[in-house]
Each structure stands twice: as C-alpha cells, then as structure tokens.
Image 1: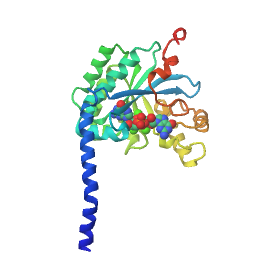
Image 2: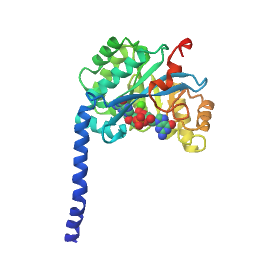
Image 3: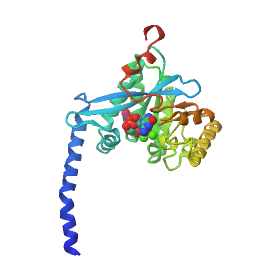
Length: 275
Ligand code: C2E
Ligand code: CA
Ligand code: CA
Ligand code: CA
C-alpha cells in the first residue's frame, strides 16, 4: 500500500507542478494586462420585462491573452482577487464603463460589477466619486453590482462604504441573489436598490415547480421591500413569459441580447436621429 501511495504521488506530481507553473504564469500576465491593453469591456442589455425596452447595460470584463486567447472572467477574476491585481483591473473597469456610458446620447444605466476586494479597499467610495467627476457621468446612471460575499467578511465596514457610495447618488444592486448564505438578513441590513436574482433560479422556471416557487417568493419579497427584481440568464421566451406573468420588473440574458462590444448596440445608445 505504501509503494502504491508513493506511486500515486509520483504520478500526480508533474501534473500538479505544471498546474502551479501555469497559474503563476497567469498571475504574472494578469499583472500587466491593463497596461498592455489586453482588457476589454463588453456590454449586455438589461430590459424592462413589460415593454422590452432597454433600460441599461451590464459591463462585463474580457481578457484577450496574447497566447491563450480569450480567458474567462470565472477563471481570472478569482486569481486577480487573490493577488490584488483586481484593484488596478477593477479601477480600469469602473473608469472605462463610466467613460463609455457618459458618451451615450441616451441616459441609460450602466451596471458595473464590484469585487469584494475592491469594496473593502481603503478609499473605494472616494474612487467612485473621482471617476464620476472625471467622466462626467451622472451618479444616478451608475449601478454597482455587489455580491453577498462582499458583505459577510466585515459587515460594519461594508455598510459604511455602501452608505458613502449611496450618498453620491449611485445605485446598488445585490448580485447573484439566492446563492449566498444569508440573503434575507443582508437585504434588510444593507441599502440595496435592486435584487438581481441569479440565473440558476431562472433556468427552466416555466416548467420546474420548485424553481417557479422560489422565483415567486423572491418577487413577493421584492414587492414587500419595494425593491425591483432583475432576472438574469433569461434564455427562452417561455422563461420570459413566466417573468412577465409574475410581474418581474427587469430581465437580462441571451434571449434579450448577448454581451458584445458597445458598437453592436449603437442604435440603442444613440438618440433617434443619429441611430
Ligand atoms: P455575473 O455578474 O453573474 O454576470 C453574468 C454572467 O452570466 C456573465 O458571464 C454573462 O455573460 C452570463 N450570461 C448572461 N446572460 C446569460 C444567459 O442567458 N445564459 C448564460 N448561460 N449565461 C449568461 P461572464 O461575462 O462570463 O462573467 C462571469 C462572472 O465574472 C460574472 O458573473 C462576474 O461575477 C464576473 N465578472 C465579469 N466581469 C467582471 C468585472 O468587470 N468585475 C468583476 N469584479 N467581476 C466580473
Ligand atoms: Ca453581475
Ligand atoms: Ca450570476
Ligand atoms: Ca457572479
């Protein structure tokens, strides 16, 4: 058994070593991604369920690695958070997204994802203020998407920062609602303006009774608290029809528009005459 154990170790060692090398290489490349111009924002429409009108866009980050090609944010954001690169990257994301939105003819909303690491970094509220001033974007058009993981580590500090951001006139959305530990108490304790329900609760909501029950409960919760609900990851017209029937306010997903360069949405951001 002993030799078998050693054999197992020897078998996995090169694989593990290669993984660690690969991860170190990614960490290193990520540190230079901003200055090398390898990052890009894509935008996904957020629509009113009732009318289908686009009310805003979520800004989503893309990394075009020179050798690896497109690297998924699901892979590189956690690495950037662990190494601290997320601070420079997140600042670039905020500035770029606000600059972009400020250039539109229509006063649509821009939703920007904020990492827990950013939220807890000293001076984050001041950074948001500075970016708004520098880009000239009206604060009411900026919505920050915050996940619950950002709230639990240091709730007192998180609340203080969120209050300062709200005082600027910026809106706050609770992102990935339902996937965290204590969504209900967090909704009460923090000054959110919107509930963004995770796409895992939208999938097959039109045919799955459990999912439908959860969705109805969240919509009831939103109504009770006076918070609009946005459903993300809407892929089928049956899912959208369910949301309409249950009076969900807003939706986002491949059915309504895939994330893409803002040029793909030029007719929506320009005023009628210029589109
Ligand atoms: P998220 O905040 O939950 O963003 C929604 C994700 O769902 C995006 O993936 C989007 O492309 C995808 N999506 C939208 N509609 C559909 C749909 O109908 N079906 C399916 N299957 N997926 C859909 P993406 O762009 O790969 O981003 C993944 C995650 O990476 C985001 O999840 C967010 O947590 C993080 N992320 C992306 N951009 C940023 C950023 O600028 N800053 C930070 N801190 N995190 C970011
Ligand atoms: Ca989000
Ligand atoms: Ca989500
Ligand atoms: Ca997420």
